[in-house]
Amino acid sequence: NWCYRQLGKPYNWNYFNTSTRTAFYCSQLVWASFYDNYDIDLSTSSFGSAIHPSELVDSGNTYTIYSK
Image 1 (cartoon, rainbow, N blue to C red):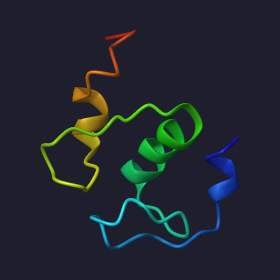
Image 2 (image 1 turned 90 degrees about the vertical axis):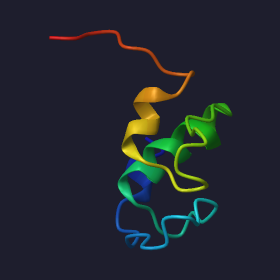
Image 3 (image 1 turned 180 degrees about the vertical axis):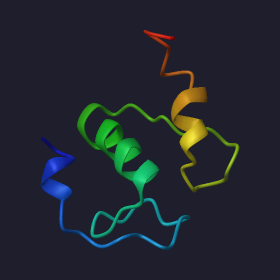
């Protein structure tokens, strides 16, 4: 529901500005939903302050529940 309420916001072209909630890029949206709602930080230090898709997988706070 939190992500759904972000529909219509512009794309965040400043990948290093993850603190904004007025615009999002794809990985930032997923990261922010966990961080803002559950205080779970899925970022790693691999890409500085930007959130890269691989961080969402490589974070110590996530794990694989299904693999084909």
